[in-house]
Length: 245
Length: 221
Ligand SMILES: Nc1ncnc2c1ncn2[C@@H]1O[C@H](COP(=O)(O)OP(=O)(O)O)[C@@H](O)[C@H]1O
Ligand SMILES: [Mg+2]
Image 1 (cartoon, each protein chain N blue to C red):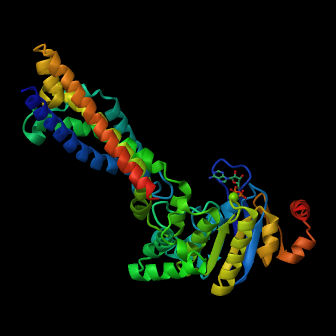
Image 2: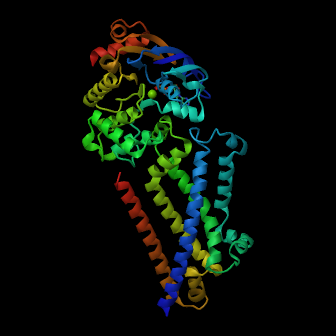
Image 3: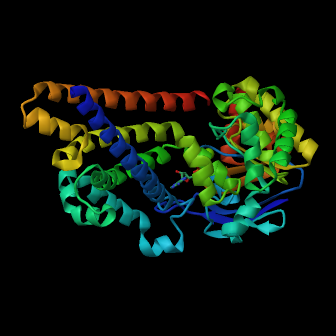
């Protein structure tokens, strides 16, 4: 379960805050899409949820901890239970696919045999068993993102946070990555948050949608409902682009 | 006879450069990593100790001073320290001290820029996986920066060769010393030319090996 209460964040020198009183909750096992134009505050939201950025105000509960209250070793402990997927994959170039999936397990002090076994298992889940000894530079974008997803799942997280997971990928590969996200959501009962500026992605993959504009939530609800009857100016504008694609 | 002289001088130069290279690369890596570590908000920038000591700014200022003092001046200025450390201020062993000290700031900047070249996203990915700051340095930054670090260390060794020739001119031994004593003072143009040829060959060899290692490391990725 994810729940945010009144989260605000202003970067130094900023006039309009990047996040302004954001509150929402995502049910266990849901796939929730956070949409907004670029600059809306989506990445900031994810960065606050992962503890990379400190909030000015508010609480972020993931599972039973408030991530905003944790520091140092306690924060790192909580971070190890999050799965994070990045737009640009962010794989370690000096490690193979298998090595990349093993990395978070090594950080969490799993034994080498245990880490290896689990990493092999996860590469199998994402359909990349045959590429386990390949370095990221030798993998396609879609394959790199599969490794990224396997890596995010390594520590058995209860939530998967994805910041623009398909924005660097072509439409066909985007489909297959979204299918994979749905598959792991079903298989591991992991709650998924997908941040995106592409509305079509929420249409394909999300149970619920949160629309964010200038750091504020402007609309929220079940995906099909929100997409059929948008009320906010921003979503109305985005929905028109949807019907063309 | 000429060959004998050259060979001895070459060995002295290689010895000086190797010793000073190891020392300056090790200490330069520590300083360079500290420069990065204490300026990075994800690592040690906000540590209480850094708030008090401003480690990055202080180290950076020292490095800048070290980089701006001409090597010849440094060599003379630290003679008391050299005597203290190795018991003498002339000869090959004595030259290692100023060579090492002169190259530390250089190596530190080299390491710093290599580490800053590591993809920010990769560093942040490690942080959100719960990696501790030192784990980020040792398990992400150093290995990710390795090809670039190897090139930077090569550069450090190459500049040590030319510094060592300068050290030779003031009694440090090695190829520079040979060039001055025979080539210049005894008008032995053949020795002078031979020395230059050997120096060029040495620099070429270091560059070639360094580049080959860097490419080999990089190609594995
Ligand atoms: N590190 C930062 N320093 C200052 N301002 C930032 C920083 N990161 C983002 N911003 C600003 O915060 C706002 C939200 O950015 P971001 O969360 O990246 O939006 P999105 O991911 O929705 O495109 C933007 O106005 C952006 O310019
Ligand atoms: Mg963004």
